[in-house]
Image 1 (cartoon, rainbow, N blue to C red):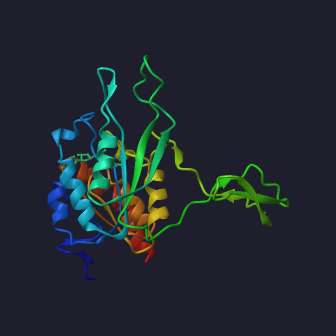
Image 2: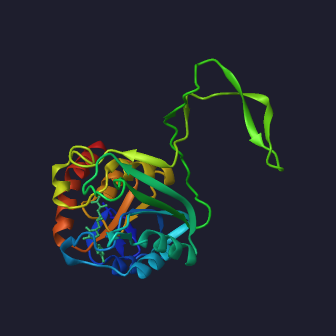
Image 3: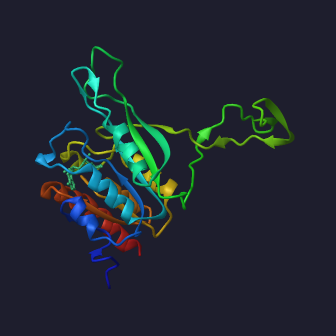
Length: 275
Ligand SMILES: C[S@@+](CC[C@H](N)C(=O)[O-])C[C@H]1O[C@@H](n2cnc3c(N)ncnc32)[C@H](O)[C@@H]1O
């Protein structure tokens, strides 16, 4: 069976290399969606690897298709009582180089790792949604139970007039049982919650499968190409695979690539049985 290619690289593979070098091998406008979490500030050492943020952002812009989306999951380090502000600086840089800041979403965790005594406990990370122009694939998840829903009642909706006053629509709307989600996502994290794959926890900082899955479903369609330049334990690849998307990824650490490959192996087998 011939392998599907993306430029000089094979699709559905994780390459052990620096992501800037890796992305340079991808053609312009070839990626539909990126879901990634880079190492931020120097919170963790990741076997000592680092990256040049500005070069990564520029490569992401070049490889993203028109209408493609980048999900950038980041947080800030607090040092001498002050947050670094790196997340905001990065978001503004993405805008400077041409991305649209489509949304600033919040990933709210359900557990904290390092409680602090001088401020409210840190429980979230940003999920910046950058798009190259208008997002071309949009499937907003509607799983928010509508508290006013009673199965029968029809309500009149409100809107704002041009002068800012509240007015009623003439026609009646039937309230749906489920509405589109808000942009703060509370996602269980940690052991037995981020994933059930034990091997993934050999990596120090995985994000939950649900985070990757819900973004993949929201901003891409089947057959699309999903990139993660900081693949870690392979969460984005696994969720792309299980939802009939192609993936491509880079990870600089040989140890982490091994973890990701081993993790994916069982799902790759399932896929080939299914086809
Ligand atoms: C926050 S972790 C990603 C975790 C991943 N989302 C998961 O669920 O497993 C960031 C990863 O980036 C990798 N990394 C650091 N510098 C890199 C570079 N220049 N190129 C590719 N990967 C790099 C680190 O080794 C680390 O595994």
